[in-house]
Length: 192
Image (cartoon, rainbow, N blue to C red; front, side):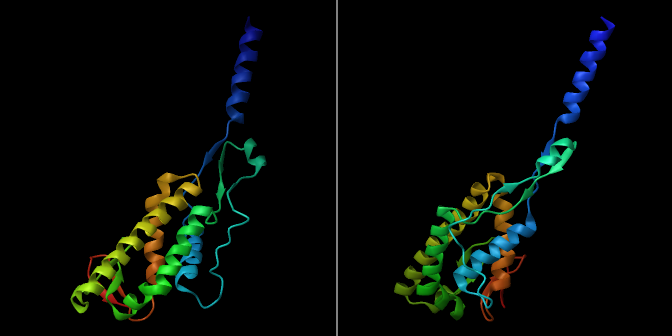
């Protein structure tokens, strides 16, 4: 009986020591790189590194040798090449080229501190242009919301949506051109 207890205790100890806890953290640096690539694709960049490709998707990687360690951190690469993300990015690029850039350059539309765009100076627009700008803002914000959600979902972490959105807030501002409007943390509109 004593031998059975020792064997059972040894088996439980071995089983528990073999268990691996994988802590998947929000990969802020990787998310910043992904956001920068997407934004460069939409509004352009100086180094030509902004194109998103729809092949060779990246996913979660971890070393099987870590199975023998009591706790392992999974290395995470942000996947921005899903079909949905590529399609949203294409729509945003087309919208930027067709009309959004013009409104940003004039200071009529600016970047909000929530990762979206807003009309800053509606009074400078005629009624017809004001309606066009409202539709433009609504379409862009719908795609931005979808983009943040799709990146989180494509990476298996719907709970990352808010963190991804926060990363984009910083990157949109960083990539804004001189003279473009943006909203500071207190909600005040500034020019870059």
